[in-house]
Amino acid sequence: QIVGKGEVNNVYVFFTASAKFVVRIDPNEDSPERFEKEAWCINESQKNGVLGAKVSKIGMYNGHPYIVLTFLEGVDGYETPEAQHAKIWTTLGGYARQIHNLKVSGYGEKMIAPGVFNGSWEKFLAYNISSLTGEDKLINLGIITLEQSKILLDVFVKLKNTAFNFGLIHNDL
Image 1 (cartoon, rainbow, N blue to C red):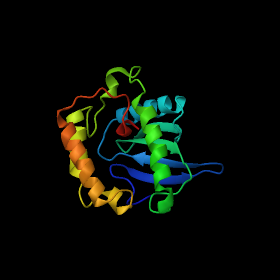
Image 2: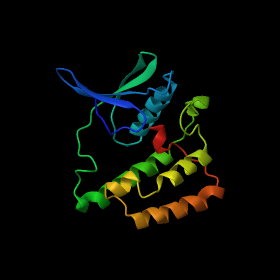
Image 3: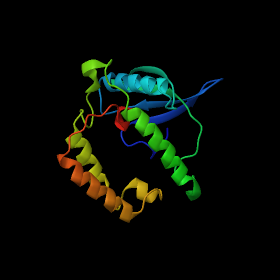
Image 4: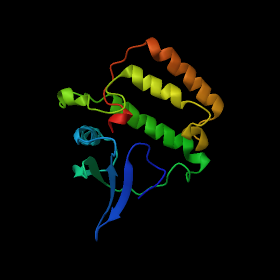
C-alpha cells in the first residue's frame, strides 16, 4: 500500500512477472460508476495526446469499486529539483488545455457520476477556495509560495459569479 499519497482512495502497487500496476480502491463508494467515467476520460485524453496510465480493469472488491492502472515510473514533486518546476508546470498546463478542450459528449448523463463535485462549478470553486491555505500541499512541495496562493485565492473568489462550459477537468481523470 502507498500511504499518505492519496486523498480519497486506498492506493496499492503490485507487480506481475512482466509488469507493474497501481490499484485504487475507493472505500467511500459502492458503485464502479465513477471509475467507469474516469476510464472513459483517460481514454479520450490519450486519444488526444495526453500522456497517462492505461486502464487495465475496473471492478468491485469487498463492496467497493477499484481501478487497475499501468504504473508509470517517475519522480514525485518532493523529489523534483526546483529548477525543473517551471518546465513541469508548463507541460501540465499544456495537458490541462488539451483536457479542457475535450468534448464530454459520448458518455452522456454519466458525466455527472457520484462524487465530490457532482458536476457543480460552485462546489469545485468552494473546494479550491478552501484548499488555498497555508496548509496547501502545493506550498509544502515548494510549487507555489504563500503569496502566490493568496493571489490564486483572490482569482477563485472573483470567479464565483462566472459560469463556464468546460470539457473535462482534472477530477474527471
